[in-house]
Amino acid sequence: MKPDLFQAPDYYLLDELLSDEHKMVRDAAREWVKREVSPIIEDYAQKAEFPKQIISGLADIGAFGPYIPEEYGGAGLDQISYGLIMQEIERGDSGVRSTASVQSSLVMYPIWKYGNEEQRKKYLPKLASGEFMGCFGLTEPDYGSNPGGMITNFKDMGDHYLLNGAKMWISNAPFADIAVVWAKNEEGRIHGLIVERGMEGFSTPETHNKWSLRASATGELIFDNVKVPKENLLPNKSGLGGPLGCLDSARYGIAWGAIGAAMDCYDTALRYAKERVQFDKPIAATQLQQKKLAEMITEITKAQLLTWRLGVLRNEGKATSAQISMAKRNNVDMALHIAREARQILGGMGITGEYSIMRHMMNLESVITYEGTHDIHLLITGLDITGHAAFK
Image (cartoon, rainbow, N blue to C red; front, top):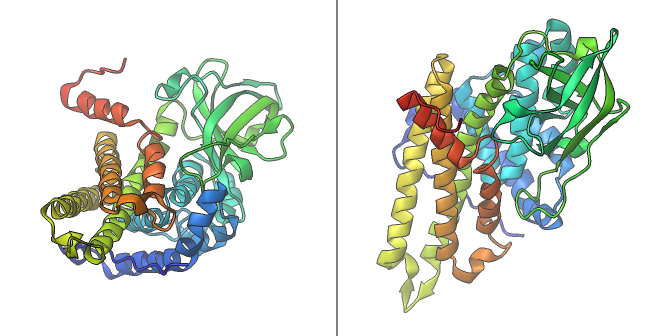
């Protein structure tokens, strides 16, 4: 088992922009990833299995709802701390970061923001501790980039709601205890419902044969006349803005997380280039490899500055959905490009599980698509600057 020798690049001394608390939170997450994730993750990716034993550790480092107030079991941290935790977890693996992102931004966030006090007290502490795991049901077989077209629906049956429909590509679905599900009522208005495992007619078949996010559990949500208690409706938000608000939080975390994957690929490639000798000198001494490495650190630095500023805006309540889209799109694309270039620096060794690069590359092929595809985020920026919606 190879030791985790990762050293985080900080070319522009961005640590000077972070508070002592930020650095403490980040360093705790970094050390946990080195100790608990790096030694096992290649094996779990090869087995296409999520390592459930790390759930309690994720809770311990504050990865579940770090910005949720302490009264509900969260850590009460700011948005930059949340981003840094996601960065460090994705440095280990995008699938593990997906598990934490879903729990925080797609399950805990809507219960906190859109739920009532009874729902917050019932679910949030157990989600924060990892006792409960959750998933988020928005995407459907025929409605991905156009979630407003969803056909999952619920009817008022007097003393309960009757839920029917299906969701797919759902992270955490196979083992989730609860699902925050978005469905249309009889008037066609979108609402969030908390569906609990064990409700009759609710099933979560697992998705197999993935080449990406292999260490993450993915599945479907099937609702066949599921009776949902009326008290499980999230009362404080309706319409498509509900799930999109959750996605803003998750996309923000992805923008930070992608930097972690990029940093890991860069650090691996830099170390390898210094050690690998060809034609009597390290390949790091050749112009083409220096070009690759110099461009990598440049793009990582730009992404770090972009997300740090976005984190400041999030803390101040000023960040827009379009700004978050720009960061998610830019940073995931950047990370995927760096993974591909790093793989080339390692040559044939780059495709093996002895190094993390190929796993990161495969994972990022999902990250660049989920929670808004690369193209859709481009068009969101286009809409924001022109006022014209090109995707309608």
